[in-house]
Amino acid sequence: MSPCTCDPLLETKNLNVQYGNAHVLQDVTLRIDDGEFVGLVGPNGAGKSTLLRSLLGLIDPSNGEVCCCGRPVHRFDDWTRIGYVPQHAVNVDAKFPASALEIALLGRVAKRGLFRRWTAEDKQAANDALARVGIDHLAERPVGTLSGGERQRVFLAKALAGNPDLLLLDEPTAGVDMSAREDFYNLIDGLNHEEGITILLVSHDLQAVQLCCHRLVALNRRIVYDGSPEAFDEEGGISRAYDMNVSHHPERTGAPP
Amino acid sequence: MTAFDLFVQYEFLQLALLASGLMALLAGALGVPLVLREMSMFGHGFAHVSYAGVALGLFAGFYPLGAALVVTVIGALAMEWMRSEGVLKGDTALAIVVSVGFALGVVIVSLAGGFTADLGGYLFGSLFAVTRTDVFLMIPVAVGLLGLFALLYKEIFYVTFDEEGARLSGLPVGVINVLVIVLTASTIVLASRFVGLLLVASLLVIPAATALQVARSFRVAIVVSMVAGFVSALVGLFLAVEFSLAPGGAIVLAAGALFVLVAGARRWGVVEA
Image (cartoon, rainbow over all chains, first blue to last red; front, side):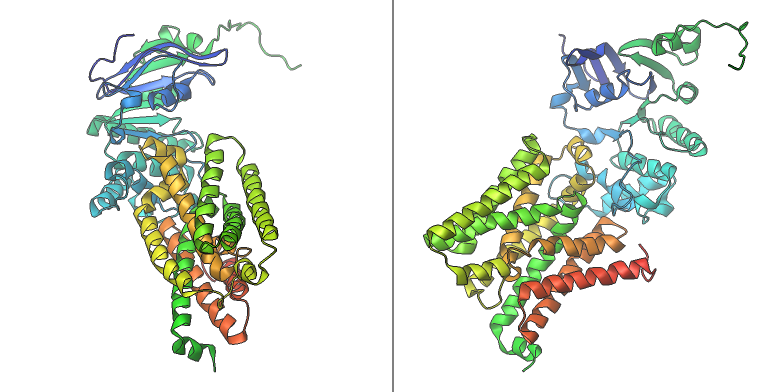
Protein backbone atom coordinates (compact mmCIF):
# COMPACT_ATOMS: atom_id res chain seq x y z
CA MET A 1 0.00 0.00 0.00
CA SER A 2 1.52 3.31 -1.01
CA PRO A 3 1.67 5.88 1.76
CA CYS A 4 -0.55 8.92 1.77
CA THR A 5 0.49 11.63 -0.58
CA CYS A 6 0.95 15.01 0.90
CA ASP A 7 -1.62 17.69 1.12
CA PRO A 8 -5.10 16.74 -0.07
CA LEU A 9 -7.36 17.52 2.84
CA LEU A 10 -8.84 14.05 2.78
CA GLU A 11 -7.81 10.95 0.97
CA THR A 12 -8.78 7.30 1.02
CA LYS A 13 -6.96 4.58 -0.86
CA ASN A 14 -8.57 1.23 -1.63
CA LEU A 15 -10.60 1.53 1.52
CA ASN A 16 -12.46 -1.61 2.55
CA VAL A 17 -14.74 -1.92 5.51
CA GLN A 18 -16.26 -5.26 6.37
CA TYR A 19 -18.55 -6.29 9.20
CA GLY A 20 -18.41 -10.06 9.38
CA ASN A 21 -19.17 -11.16 5.84
CA ALA A 22 -20.88 -7.93 4.86
CA HIS A 23 -18.81 -5.64 2.69
CA VAL A 24 -19.90 -2.16 3.62
CA LEU A 25 -17.24 -0.36 1.61
CA GLN A 26 -15.25 -1.84 -1.23
CA ASP A 27 -12.18 -0.31 -2.79
CA VAL A 28 -13.12 3.27 -2.11
CA THR A 29 -10.49 5.66 -3.41
CA LEU A 30 -11.40 9.28 -2.97
CA ARG A 31 -9.48 12.52 -2.79
CA ILE A 32 -10.84 15.83 -1.65
CA ASP A 33 -8.80 18.95 -2.28
CA ASP A 34 -8.79 22.34 -0.69
CA GLY A 35 -11.78 24.49 -1.61
CA GLU A 36 -13.96 21.75 -3.07
CA PHE A 37 -17.64 21.36 -2.36
CA VAL A 38 -18.36 17.66 -2.69
CA GLY A 39 -21.72 15.99 -2.34
CA LEU A 40 -21.77 12.34 -1.38
CA VAL A 41 -25.01 10.59 -2.31
CA GLY A 42 -26.24 7.04 -2.31
CA PRO A 43 -29.15 4.92 -1.12
CA ASN A 44 -29.67 3.83 2.47
CA GLY A 45 -27.08 1.25 3.41
CA ALA A 46 -24.67 2.42 0.69
CA GLY A 47 -22.00 3.06 3.30
CA LYS A 48 -22.12 6.87 3.33
CA SER A 49 -21.97 7.22 7.09
CA THR A 50 -19.43 4.40 7.33
CA LEU A 51 -17.20 6.25 4.88
CA LEU A 52 -17.54 9.45 6.87
CA ARG A 53 -16.81 7.70 10.15
CA SER A 54 -13.77 6.04 8.57
CA LEU A 55 -12.55 9.46 7.45
CA LEU A 56 -12.79 10.58 11.07
CA GLY A 57 -10.93 7.55 12.34
CA LEU A 58 -13.98 6.28 14.23
CA ILE A 59 -13.96 3.02 12.28
CA ASP A 60 -10.87 0.95 11.55
CA PRO A 61 -10.86 -0.17 7.92
CA SER A 62 -10.37 -3.86 7.15
CA ASN A 63 -8.05 -2.78 4.40
CA GLY A 64 -6.78 0.37 2.78
CA GLU A 65 -5.81 3.73 4.08
CA VAL A 66 -7.35 7.01 5.21
CA CYS A 67 -5.40 10.22 5.40
CA CYS A 68 -6.30 13.63 6.78
CA CYS A 69 -4.15 16.54 5.67
CA GLY A 70 -1.55 14.11 4.40
CA ARG A 71 -1.25 12.08 7.61
CA PRO A 72 -2.70 8.63 8.33
CA VAL A 73 -5.89 9.27 10.25
CA HIS A 74 -4.82 7.37 13.37
CA ARG A 75 -1.79 9.63 13.64
CA PHE A 76 -3.70 12.80 12.74
CA ASP A 77 -4.20 15.06 15.74
CA ASP A 78 -5.04 18.49 14.38
CA TRP A 79 -8.79 18.03 14.76
CA THR A 80 -9.35 21.78 14.88
CA ARG A 81 -8.96 21.71 11.08
CA ILE A 82 -12.03 19.54 10.71
CA GLY A 83 -15.55 20.49 11.71
CA TYR A 84 -18.00 17.60 11.89
CA VAL A 85 -21.76 17.76 12.14
CA PRO A 86 -23.00 14.23 12.86
CA GLN A 87 -26.25 12.74 11.65
CA HIS A 88 -29.10 13.22 14.11
CA ALA A 89 -27.24 16.07 15.82
CA VAL A 90 -30.60 17.85 15.94
CA ASN A 91 -32.12 15.05 18.01
CA VAL A 92 -30.58 16.30 21.24
CA ASP A 93 -32.27 15.47 24.51
CA ALA A 94 -34.70 18.36 24.83
CA LYS A 95 -34.17 18.40 28.58
CA PHE A 96 -30.40 18.74 28.41
CA PRO A 97 -29.52 22.12 29.91
CA ALA A 98 -27.21 23.74 27.37
CA SER A 99 -27.50 27.11 25.68
CA ALA A 100 -26.73 27.60 22.00
CA LEU A 101 -23.62 29.56 22.98
CA GLU A 102 -22.40 26.72 25.22
CA ILE A 103 -22.77 24.22 22.36
CA ALA A 104 -20.85 26.52 20.04
CA LEU A 105 -18.14 26.82 22.71
CA LEU A 106 -17.67 23.05 22.60
CA GLY A 107 -16.27 23.59 19.12
CA ARG A 108 -13.38 25.41 20.79
CA VAL A 109 -12.42 22.59 23.17
CA ALA A 110 -9.85 21.06 20.83
CA LYS A 111 -8.23 24.45 20.25
CA ARG A 112 -8.06 25.37 23.92
CA GLY A 113 -6.61 22.14 25.27
CA LEU A 114 -7.04 20.13 28.45
CA PHE A 115 -7.47 21.82 31.85
CA ARG A 116 -7.70 25.30 30.34
CA ARG A 117 -10.67 27.54 30.85
CA TRP A 118 -12.42 29.10 27.91
CA THR A 119 -10.96 32.51 27.20
CA ALA A 120 -12.53 35.73 25.94
CA GLU A 121 -11.19 34.75 22.52
CA ASP A 122 -13.13 31.45 22.66
CA LYS A 123 -16.33 33.26 23.62
CA GLN A 124 -15.80 35.73 20.80
CA ALA A 125 -15.19 32.90 18.32
CA ALA A 126 -18.32 31.06 19.49
CA ASN A 127 -20.43 34.22 19.22
CA ASP A 128 -18.97 34.93 15.78
CA ALA A 129 -19.80 31.38 14.69
CA LEU A 130 -23.41 31.84 15.82
CA ALA A 131 -23.50 35.12 13.88
CA ARG A 132 -22.06 33.46 10.76
CA VAL A 133 -24.97 31.03 10.73
CA GLY A 134 -27.43 33.80 11.55
CA ILE A 135 -28.57 32.82 15.03
CA ASP A 136 -26.55 35.06 17.34
CA HIS A 137 -29.87 36.35 18.74
CA LEU A 138 -30.54 32.82 20.08
CA ALA A 139 -27.22 32.51 21.94
CA GLU A 140 -28.74 32.26 25.42
CA ARG A 141 -31.64 29.98 24.45
CA PRO A 142 -31.55 26.36 25.64
CA VAL A 143 -30.91 24.23 22.58
CA GLY A 144 -33.84 21.96 23.48
CA THR A 145 -36.29 24.83 22.93
CA LEU A 146 -35.09 25.60 19.38
CA SER A 147 -36.64 24.38 16.13
CA GLY A 148 -34.96 21.69 14.02
CA GLY A 149 -33.53 24.25 11.61
CA GLU A 150 -32.23 26.42 14.42
CA ARG A 151 -30.62 23.45 16.16
CA GLN A 152 -28.98 22.50 12.88
CA ARG A 153 -27.38 25.92 12.81
CA VAL A 154 -26.22 25.61 16.40
CA PHE A 155 -24.32 22.44 15.50
CA LEU A 156 -22.96 24.06 12.36
CA ALA A 157 -21.79 26.97 14.55
CA LYS A 158 -20.10 24.45 16.87
CA ALA A 159 -18.26 22.99 13.89
CA LEU A 160 -17.33 26.49 12.65
CA ALA A 161 -16.19 27.85 16.02
CA GLY A 162 -12.81 26.14 15.68
CA ASN A 163 -12.30 27.85 12.27
CA PRO A 164 -11.93 24.56 10.37
CA ASP A 165 -10.62 24.15 6.83
CA LEU A 166 -13.00 21.31 6.17
CA LEU A 167 -16.61 20.68 7.13
CA LEU A 168 -18.04 17.17 7.17
CA LEU A 169 -21.82 17.25 7.21
CA ASP A 170 -23.69 13.97 7.64
CA GLU A 171 -27.32 14.25 6.51
CA PRO A 172 -27.50 17.73 7.97
CA THR A 173 -31.05 18.41 6.91
CA ALA A 174 -32.70 15.27 8.25
CA GLY A 175 -35.51 16.37 10.52
CA VAL A 176 -35.46 19.95 9.23
CA ASP A 177 -38.45 21.45 7.41
CA MET A 178 -38.36 22.42 3.73
CA SER A 179 -37.89 26.17 4.00
CA ALA A 180 -35.17 25.80 6.65
CA ARG A 181 -33.53 23.25 4.38
CA GLU A 182 -33.21 25.72 1.53
CA ASP A 183 -31.75 28.37 3.84
CA PHE A 184 -29.29 25.82 5.16
CA TYR A 185 -28.01 24.92 1.69
CA ASN A 186 -27.62 28.60 0.86
CA LEU A 187 -25.70 29.06 4.07
CA ILE A 188 -23.16 26.29 3.44
CA ASP A 189 -22.87 27.39 -0.19
CA GLY A 190 -21.82 30.80 1.16
CA LEU A 191 -19.30 29.21 3.52
CA ASN A 192 -17.69 27.46 0.58
CA HIS A 193 -17.79 30.39 -1.88
CA GLU A 194 -17.07 33.31 0.39
CA GLU A 195 -14.91 31.77 3.09
CA GLY A 196 -13.24 29.05 1.03
CA ILE A 197 -14.16 26.26 3.45
CA THR A 198 -13.96 22.81 1.90
CA ILE A 199 -17.19 20.89 2.34
CA LEU A 200 -18.11 17.24 2.16
CA LEU A 201 -21.88 16.99 2.32
CA VAL A 202 -23.43 13.57 2.81
CA SER A 203 -27.07 13.47 1.86
CA HIS A 204 -29.76 11.47 0.21
CA ASP A 205 -31.30 14.75 -0.93
CA LEU A 206 -30.04 14.29 -4.49
CA GLN A 207 -31.69 17.38 -5.95
CA ALA A 208 -30.22 19.69 -3.37
CA VAL A 209 -26.77 18.15 -3.73
CA GLN A 210 -26.96 18.52 -7.51
CA LEU A 211 -27.92 22.16 -7.16
CA CYS A 212 -25.20 23.32 -4.82
CA CYS A 213 -22.21 20.99 -5.04
CA HIS A 214 -19.37 21.28 -7.54
CA ARG A 215 -18.65 17.61 -7.56
CA LEU A 216 -20.87 14.67 -6.96
CA VAL A 217 -19.74 11.32 -5.65
CA ALA A 218 -22.23 8.48 -5.67
CA LEU A 219 -21.58 5.59 -3.36
CA ASN A 220 -23.12 2.17 -3.38
CA ARG A 221 -20.55 0.24 -1.38
CA ARG A 222 -18.16 1.26 -4.16
CA ILE A 223 -17.82 4.62 -5.80
CA VAL A 224 -20.14 4.36 -8.80
CA TYR A 225 -19.90 7.94 -9.96
CA ASP A 226 -17.45 10.75 -9.37
CA GLY A 227 -17.85 13.82 -11.52
CA SER A 228 -19.89 16.88 -12.28
CA PRO A 229 -23.38 17.05 -10.82
CA GLU A 230 -24.81 18.10 -14.18
CA ALA A 231 -23.58 15.02 -16.00
CA PHE A 232 -24.79 12.65 -13.27
CA ASP A 233 -28.22 12.03 -14.79
CA GLU A 234 -26.99 11.73 -18.37
CA GLU A 235 -24.42 9.13 -17.44
CA GLY A 236 -26.96 6.96 -15.72
CA GLY A 237 -25.59 7.71 -12.30
CA ILE A 238 -28.93 7.21 -10.62
CA SER A 239 -29.48 3.68 -11.77
CA ARG A 240 -25.94 2.73 -10.84
CA ALA A 241 -26.13 4.38 -7.47
CA TYR A 242 -29.55 3.15 -6.56
CA ASP A 243 -29.41 -0.29 -8.19
CA MET A 244 -32.51 0.60 -10.15
CA ASN A 245 -33.01 -0.75 -13.62
CA VAL A 246 -36.72 -0.27 -13.73
CA SER A 247 -38.03 -0.25 -17.24
CA HIS A 248 -40.56 2.40 -17.95
CA HIS A 249 -43.92 1.32 -19.36
CA PRO A 250 -45.91 4.42 -20.28
CA GLU A 251 -48.56 2.32 -22.04
CA ARG A 252 -49.60 0.67 -18.78
CA THR A 253 -51.80 3.32 -17.35
CA GLY A 254 -52.67 2.66 -13.80
CA ALA A 255 -56.04 1.12 -13.23
CA PRO A 256 -57.50 0.90 -9.76
CA PRO A 257 -57.32 -2.65 -8.44
CA MET B 1 -29.92 27.69 73.85
CA THR B 2 -30.86 27.89 70.17
CA ALA B 3 -29.02 26.17 67.37
CA PHE B 4 -27.67 29.52 66.29
CA ASP B 5 -26.08 30.13 69.70
CA LEU B 6 -24.55 26.66 69.64
CA PHE B 7 -23.01 27.28 66.24
CA VAL B 8 -21.59 30.59 67.42
CA GLN B 9 -20.23 29.06 70.61
CA TYR B 10 -18.65 25.83 69.40
CA GLU B 11 -15.79 26.05 66.97
CA PHE B 12 -16.24 22.38 66.12
CA LEU B 13 -19.80 22.97 64.90
CA GLN B 14 -18.55 25.78 62.68
CA LEU B 15 -15.92 23.48 61.20
CA ALA B 16 -18.53 20.77 60.69
CA LEU B 17 -20.77 23.29 58.99
CA LEU B 18 -17.93 24.40 56.73
CA ALA B 19 -16.97 20.81 55.89
CA SER B 20 -20.49 19.67 55.14
CA GLY B 21 -21.19 22.85 53.16
CA LEU B 22 -18.12 22.22 51.02
CA MET B 23 -19.11 18.58 50.52
CA ALA B 24 -22.59 19.68 49.48
CA LEU B 25 -21.15 22.14 46.95
CA LEU B 26 -19.00 19.38 45.49
CA ALA B 27 -21.81 16.84 45.42
CA GLY B 28 -24.07 19.43 43.79
CA ALA B 29 -21.57 20.08 41.01
CA LEU B 30 -20.84 16.40 40.34
CA GLY B 31 -24.50 15.43 40.54
CA VAL B 32 -25.50 17.30 37.37
CA PRO B 33 -23.32 15.33 34.93
CA LEU B 34 -24.11 12.13 36.84
CA VAL B 35 -27.88 12.61 36.57
CA LEU B 36 -27.66 13.72 32.92
CA ARG B 37 -25.71 10.58 32.04
CA GLU B 38 -28.33 8.48 33.82
CA MET B 39 -25.76 7.27 36.33
CA SER B 40 -27.73 8.36 39.40
CA MET B 41 -27.39 4.95 41.00
CA PHE B 42 -23.59 5.05 40.86
CA GLY B 43 -23.49 7.22 43.96
CA HIS B 44 -25.58 4.67 45.81
CA GLY B 45 -23.23 1.94 44.61
CA PHE B 46 -20.11 3.76 45.78
CA ALA B 47 -21.66 4.30 49.20
CA HIS B 48 -22.26 0.57 49.64
CA VAL B 49 -18.71 -0.25 48.58
CA SER B 50 -17.38 2.25 51.09
CA TYR B 51 -19.04 0.20 53.85
CA ALA B 52 -16.45 -2.52 53.20
CA GLY B 53 -13.72 0.10 53.54
CA VAL B 54 -15.08 1.47 56.80
CA ALA B 55 -15.41 -2.05 58.24
CA LEU B 56 -11.90 -2.93 57.10
CA GLY B 57 -10.54 0.23 58.69
CA LEU B 58 -12.30 -0.41 62.00
CA PHE B 59 -11.27 -4.08 61.97
CA ALA B 60 -7.62 -3.57 61.08
CA GLY B 61 -7.21 -0.44 63.12
CA PHE B 62 -6.67 1.91 60.16
CA TYR B 63 -8.30 5.28 59.96
CA PRO B 64 -11.78 4.18 58.72
CA LEU B 65 -12.46 7.14 56.44
CA GLY B 66 -9.05 6.71 54.80
CA ALA B 67 -9.60 2.98 54.32
CA ALA B 68 -13.06 3.70 52.89
CA LEU B 69 -11.57 6.22 50.45
CA VAL B 70 -9.07 3.68 49.10
CA VAL B 71 -11.54 0.78 48.89
CA THR B 72 -14.28 2.88 47.27
CA VAL B 73 -11.98 4.38 44.64
CA ILE B 74 -10.74 0.88 43.74
CA GLY B 75 -14.33 -0.43 43.55
CA ALA B 76 -15.37 2.59 41.47
CA LEU B 77 -12.51 2.08 39.03
CA ALA B 78 -13.50 -1.58 38.70
CA MET B 79 -17.05 -0.49 37.86
CA GLU B 80 -15.85 2.06 35.32
CA TRP B 81 -13.56 -0.52 33.75
CA MET B 82 -16.44 -3.00 33.41
CA ARG B 83 -18.64 -0.26 31.96
CA SER B 84 -16.11 0.96 29.38
CA GLU B 85 -14.94 -2.50 28.37
CA GLY B 86 -18.54 -3.58 27.97
CA VAL B 87 -17.86 -6.61 30.20
CA LEU B 88 -21.24 -6.03 31.75
CA LYS B 89 -24.06 -3.64 31.08
CA GLY B 90 -23.94 -0.59 33.32
CA ASP B 91 -26.39 -1.55 36.00
CA THR B 92 -25.38 -5.23 36.18
CA ALA B 93 -21.78 -4.26 36.90
CA LEU B 94 -23.14 -1.84 39.45
CA ALA B 95 -25.31 -4.46 41.12
CA ILE B 96 -22.40 -6.90 41.38
CA VAL B 97 -19.87 -4.46 42.77
CA VAL B 98 -22.40 -3.00 45.20
CA SER B 99 -23.45 -6.34 46.64
CA VAL B 100 -19.92 -7.75 46.80
CA GLY B 101 -18.68 -4.58 48.48
CA PHE B 102 -21.49 -4.52 51.00
CA ALA B 103 -21.20 -8.28 51.65
CA LEU B 104 -17.49 -7.84 52.28
CA GLY B 105 -18.34 -5.19 54.86
CA VAL B 106 -20.93 -7.41 56.53
CA VAL B 107 -18.49 -10.34 56.73
CA ILE B 108 -15.70 -8.20 58.18
CA VAL B 109 -18.09 -6.78 60.77
CA SER B 110 -19.19 -10.29 61.80
CA LEU B 111 -15.55 -11.44 62.02
CA ALA B 112 -14.87 -8.57 64.36
CA GLY B 113 -17.87 -9.55 66.46
CA GLY B 114 -19.55 -6.28 65.58
CA PHE B 115 -18.69 -2.71 66.46
CA THR B 116 -22.18 -1.38 66.30
CA ALA B 117 -21.79 2.02 67.90
CA ASP B 118 -19.05 3.18 65.53
CA LEU B 119 -20.68 1.64 62.48
CA GLY B 120 -24.00 3.29 63.21
CA GLY B 121 -22.31 6.66 62.85
CA TYR B 122 -21.06 5.72 59.39
CA LEU B 123 -24.31 4.12 58.22
CA PHE B 124 -26.64 6.90 59.27
CA GLY B 125 -24.28 9.83 59.64
CA SER B 126 -23.65 11.74 62.78
CA LEU B 127 -22.51 15.14 63.83
CA PHE B 128 -21.08 14.00 67.13
CA ALA B 129 -19.17 10.93 65.97
CA VAL B 130 -17.32 13.10 63.46
CA THR B 131 -13.77 13.62 64.65
CA ARG B 132 -11.51 16.64 64.21
CA THR B 133 -9.32 14.44 61.98
CA ASP B 134 -12.37 13.82 59.76
CA VAL B 135 -13.09 17.51 59.42
CA PHE B 136 -9.46 18.44 58.80
CA LEU B 137 -9.30 15.76 56.11
CA MET B 138 -12.57 16.83 54.50
CA ILE B 139 -11.93 20.54 54.16
CA PRO B 140 -8.70 20.48 52.12
CA VAL B 141 -9.79 17.42 50.11
CA ALA B 142 -13.13 19.05 49.27
CA VAL B 143 -11.38 22.26 48.19
CA GLY B 144 -8.94 20.24 46.09
CA LEU B 145 -11.72 18.22 44.44
CA LEU B 146 -13.71 21.39 43.71
CA GLY B 147 -10.58 22.80 42.08
CA LEU B 148 -10.21 19.66 39.96
CA PHE B 149 -13.86 19.94 38.91
CA ALA B 150 -13.33 23.56 37.88
CA LEU B 151 -10.24 22.60 35.87
CA LEU B 152 -12.15 19.84 34.08
CA TYR B 153 -15.36 21.82 33.66
CA LYS B 154 -15.39 22.12 29.88
CA GLU B 155 -14.24 18.53 29.41
CA ILE B 156 -16.94 17.23 31.79
CA PHE B 157 -19.54 19.30 29.93
CA TYR B 158 -18.42 17.89 26.57
CA VAL B 159 -18.30 14.26 27.72
CA THR B 160 -21.72 14.63 29.37
CA PHE B 161 -23.27 16.19 26.29
CA ASP B 162 -21.67 14.07 23.59
CA GLU B 163 -19.07 11.46 24.42
CA GLU B 164 -18.27 10.61 20.81
CA GLY B 165 -17.92 14.26 19.82
CA ALA B 166 -15.60 14.78 22.75
CA ARG B 167 -13.46 11.85 21.65
CA LEU B 168 -13.38 13.23 18.10
CA SER B 169 -12.16 16.59 19.26
CA GLY B 170 -9.16 14.79 20.69
CA LEU B 171 -10.16 14.72 24.37
CA PRO B 172 -8.88 11.73 26.37
CA VAL B 173 -12.42 10.65 27.22
CA GLY B 174 -11.32 7.53 29.14
CA VAL B 175 -9.09 9.57 31.45
CA ILE B 176 -11.82 12.15 32.03
CA ASN B 177 -14.37 9.43 32.85
CA VAL B 178 -11.96 7.89 35.35
CA LEU B 179 -11.27 11.26 36.98
CA VAL B 180 -15.00 11.98 37.30
CA ILE B 181 -15.55 8.55 38.84
CA VAL B 182 -12.72 9.10 41.35
CA LEU B 183 -14.09 12.55 42.18
CA THR B 184 -17.55 11.12 42.74
CA ALA B 185 -16.35 8.18 44.83
CA SER B 186 -14.25 10.45 47.06
CA THR B 187 -17.14 12.86 47.52
CA ILE B 188 -19.46 10.02 48.50
CA VAL B 189 -17.04 8.67 51.11
CA LEU B 190 -16.30 12.04 52.71
CA ALA B 191 -19.88 13.30 52.66
CA SER B 192 -21.10 10.00 54.13
CA ARG B 193 -19.50 11.00 57.46
CA PHE B 194 -22.28 13.52 58.00
CA VAL B 195 -25.08 12.20 55.86
CA GLY B 196 -24.51 8.47 56.34
CA LEU B 197 -23.74 5.79 53.77
CA LEU B 198 -27.39 4.97 53.26
CA LEU B 199 -28.44 8.51 52.39
CA VAL B 200 -25.37 10.11 50.89
CA ALA B 201 -26.21 9.36 47.24
CA SER B 202 -29.21 11.65 47.47
CA LEU B 203 -26.84 14.56 48.04
CA LEU B 204 -25.64 13.96 44.48
CA VAL B 205 -29.02 13.36 42.93
CA ILE B 206 -31.62 15.63 44.59
CA PRO B 207 -29.89 19.03 44.20
CA ALA B 208 -29.05 18.15 40.58
CA ALA B 209 -32.65 17.16 39.89
CA THR B 210 -33.76 20.44 41.47
CA ALA B 211 -31.39 22.42 39.25
CA LEU B 212 -32.50 20.60 36.10
CA GLN B 213 -36.05 21.81 36.76
CA VAL B 214 -35.07 25.40 36.05
CA ALA B 215 -31.64 25.58 34.38
CA ARG B 216 -31.41 26.97 30.88
CA SER B 217 -27.71 26.31 30.47
CA PHE B 218 -25.15 23.83 31.75
CA ARG B 219 -23.32 26.45 33.78
CA VAL B 220 -26.54 27.58 35.48
CA ALA B 221 -27.47 23.94 36.18
CA ILE B 222 -24.15 23.39 37.98
CA VAL B 223 -24.43 26.63 39.97
CA VAL B 224 -28.07 26.07 40.99
CA SER B 225 -27.31 22.49 41.97
CA MET B 226 -24.37 23.62 44.13
CA VAL B 227 -26.51 26.28 45.79
CA ALA B 228 -29.36 23.81 46.36
CA GLY B 229 -26.95 21.33 47.95
CA PHE B 230 -25.36 24.01 50.12
CA VAL B 231 -28.69 25.39 51.33
CA SER B 232 -29.92 21.86 52.12
CA ALA B 233 -26.79 21.10 54.15
CA LEU B 234 -27.05 24.39 56.03
CA VAL B 235 -30.76 24.11 56.80
CA GLY B 236 -30.45 20.41 57.61
CA LEU B 237 -27.60 20.88 60.06
CA PHE B 238 -29.36 23.76 61.83
CA LEU B 239 -32.53 21.70 62.17
CA ALA B 240 -30.49 18.71 63.37
CA VAL B 241 -28.84 20.75 66.11
CA GLU B 242 -31.99 22.64 67.07
CA PHE B 243 -34.24 19.59 67.35
CA SER B 244 -31.62 16.88 68.01
CA LEU B 245 -32.33 15.12 64.71
CA ALA B 246 -30.07 12.82 62.73
CA PRO B 247 -28.14 15.27 60.51
CA GLY B 248 -28.19 13.00 57.44
CA GLY B 249 -31.94 12.63 57.54
CA ALA B 250 -32.45 16.34 58.15
CA ILE B 251 -30.16 17.34 55.25
CA VAL B 252 -31.80 14.95 52.80
CA LEU B 253 -35.29 16.01 53.89
CA ALA B 254 -34.28 19.63 53.38
CA ALA B 255 -32.99 18.76 49.89
CA GLY B 256 -36.22 16.92 49.14
CA ALA B 257 -38.35 19.83 50.35
CA LEU B 258 -36.36 22.22 48.18
CA PHE B 259 -36.93 19.95 45.18
CA VAL B 260 -40.68 19.86 45.79
CA LEU B 261 -40.73 23.65 46.17
CA VAL B 262 -38.83 24.28 42.92
CA ALA B 263 -40.65 21.59 40.92
CA GLY B 264 -43.96 22.97 42.21
CA ALA B 265 -43.00 26.56 41.42
CA ARG B 266 -42.15 25.47 37.91
CA ARG B 267 -45.33 23.50 37.48
CA TRP B 268 -47.49 26.40 38.59
CA GLY B 269 -45.57 28.75 36.33
CA VAL B 270 -43.92 30.78 39.11
CA VAL B 271 -40.54 30.16 37.51
CA GLU B 272 -39.89 29.56 33.85
CA ALA B 273 -37.88 26.61 32.67
